[in-house]
Every structure is written in C-alpha cells, then in structure tokens.
Image (tube, rainbow, N blue to C red; front, side, top):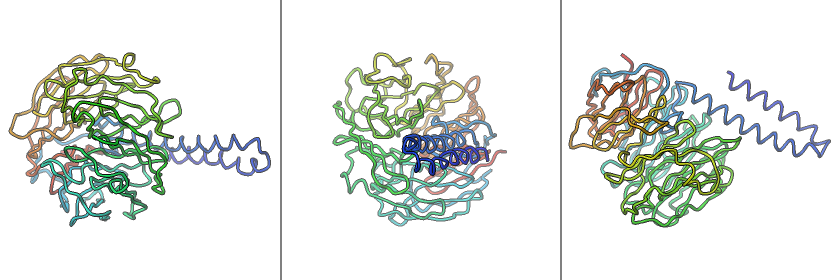
Amino acid sequence: MERIAVGQVLLVFFESFEVNSAMNPNLMQIKSASRTLTILSLFSISIAWAAENPNQWPRWRGPHDNGSAQGGTYAVAFSGTSNVLWKASLPGKGCSTPIIWDQRIYLTAPAEGQDAVLAFDWSGKRLWETRVGPEVAGKHQNGSGSNPSPVTDGSGVYVYFKSGHLAALDFGGKLRWKTNLVERYGKDTLYWDHGISPVLTEKDVVIARMHHGESWLAAFDKQTGVMHWKAPRNYETPVEGDHSYASPITVARGGKQEILVLGAQHLTAHDAANGKVLWSCGDFNAKGRSYLPVVASALLEGDTIVVPYGRDKDCTLQAIKLGGSGDVTASHRVWKREDTGSFVPTPAAAQGRIYVVRDRGEVECIDATTGKTIWSDELPKNRASYYSSPTVADGKLYAAREDGVVFVARVERKFELLAENNMGERIIASPVPVANRLLLRGEKHLFCIAAQ
C-alpha cells in the first residue's frame, strides 16, 4: 500500500503541471523533468519494495542480485519423493531458474518444439502456457534452449531464448510483443548455449550478446518492443576470451540507472538511457590465457561488484568499487584473489560474506570487505559437477549438483553439512527460497519444498 500511495502522490504532483504548463511555456521544462522524476521514482520504489518483500524473487539471482534471501525458514531434509509440498510436471528440458511475483511462479521451457513460458500458482497448479516460437535446442548436456531466466518488474514478464526470441507477456499469459534477435542480428558464435538472462531498466528490457563477432548490448521498450538503442561492446581477446555467458546487473546511482556488464576481459558500466559506456575496468586476464570465457556472473555486495573470472589455475576473484568515469582499472579494484574463484557457479553473498562453490564442490567463505578467507571446506565429491549457482537463506547454503543431489549446509559461523537430498533428476537451475518455500527446477519437474 505504501508503494501505491507514494506513486499516487508523485502522479498528482506531475498532473498538476498539465494545465499550468499549457498557459505558461516556462513550466514546460519543469513538466518534462517532473515526468522523468515520476517514472524513475516509481520504478525505484517498485524495485525497493521487491527487495524488501520476502515474497518476491523477480530475477535470476533474486531481489538483491546476490543469490540470497532475507528472513524465512527453509527445509533441510527432503527428496524427490518425500517432504515435497507439491511437484509439477514440465513439458520439456529447460535450465532456467523460476522467478516469483505475488505467489505466482514463472519459468521457461520447451513445449512440443516451441519456446514456452509457463505460470503456476502457489499450490503448483499450472495457470497458463504461452508459446513464443520454434525452439532451438541446447547442445551441451547441461544446457537447453531455455537457459536464460525470466525477469519481472511487477507489470509483466520478459523472456529470452537461445532461438533469439525476446518477448514480453502480461501476467495472464497474453503476448504483448515479440522479436527475434537471431533473425535481426545473426546467430551467436558461442561454443556452448546462450545463457545470458535479460534485465530491466525503468523503460527497457535489456539483453547482451558477447561472442566472437559483433558483440552488443541492446534495449527494447518494455511496452512496445521498439529498440531504443544498441551499443557495441567489442574487445580483442585471446581465443574464446570474448565469449560470455554472464548476465548483466542494473543499479541506480545518483538518480540514474547503470547496466553492469561482464565479458571479454572487461567489466563495463553503461548509461541505461543510451547504452553509453560510463566506466570500464579491465585486466582480468593478466596472463593473456586462451580459452577463458566468462561463465559465472558478477554479483552486488554493498557498493562493490564481486567478479569471478577464469578457470582452474587461472581463477581469480576480485571486488571492484562502483562508480567513477573512464578507465577505472587502476583506481577502483578494492581487492583481488588469485588463488580462488569460480568458473561456472555464480557465488552468493549474505551479511557481508561471499560464498563460493566451485565446479568440483569446494566451498569457501570470504569476507566481502577484505577479500580474506573466513573458512573453506568441500561438498561430497562425485563424477558429477556443480553447475547450478548456490543460494543462501536462513543461515544455510543450498547447492545443487548436476545429478540432482541438493546439499544443505549451515554456514553462519563455520561449514556444517546438514543434508544430502536426492531429487531423482538432473538440476542445473538455481534453488529459489521464497516465503518459507524452496523451489527446485529439475529437468522434468518443478518441486516445492515447504519448511518443516
């Protein structure tokens, strides 16, 4: 109710200029500024409300863009057949993580050869399925044509697929608009399947393509699908260094929105209004290694963005201070670790700590301010790897292994493995904790686990 009340006050304030400005041309500039302020304020209030509301998970890494939930109580012991509140069958293999808005669940999946968006209510009942266009299946065993996760701002659902379909739907499943970016700009040259999720600004849905070839960041009007801008993002790199599977992040700074993009050995901040580069940070591949694509995404932690980069012996983890202008490589790096990092799973953050889960199950807790290790341990090893990104909720870490085993560990003071839960099917999507319920998206089912 507070969000609506504040929005109504701003709108009344804006509307008061409608009549006056018609009689006084000097008020036209004030009217224009008022309109911009109103839209941005409403968007910021909506985003802040989502971040504070435990019942929302509006995008892949949650309301805080760090893979963590505040508050709530979540289950420890469960399986694919026990302690499941409900499970819903899915029409095909997809690897995207579901999102939640007002106790409605949205996710993408292939359905009879079509890219589809599905909605479920809080009891697991399927509300609708909307098909967007022909599917292009994934080529990696842990990939799919539905890798990118949906995103919402509370007014609609926005989706992207490997096929190139970018679409907007209302909460009833009606297609508002769609376009195909592969048809418009050609296929991507990524070695594996496209995994970048769309992000939202006050006006646009934004998608990035970073590969060997023309790389770009593009913004499309959320209401009409009309492209507002398309900004090039091209850097020379060693082989495969220009490939990125990392999703952007939007932040509000100084009354404006910025889009943070990681890929091609650079972290860049773009003006949401026109795509212009505001600042950039490089030197992520100091040794000039080949075959270092970006897979794990960056995550927000306070006024810094934590960047995992590289693989195996070339892994690094570093924190970059937000803001600045131009090349901030030498001035804004807060700390850098060259002995740890993550290649595939995106780390999570909670209460000033970074939680890193590596592909083979090593776990490390790192102080977000200093970059120093607080503790390190490991999850049970197996032939299977960890491709899902971990989630932190209720003082516990939830990490899914690709074979469908979900591990739960207490991590507040030290690492303590609490449970090993076999869901009976492969899991690549990230666990989603919302309102005392844990959602797990497998290859065949969507599971809902209630607090015990």
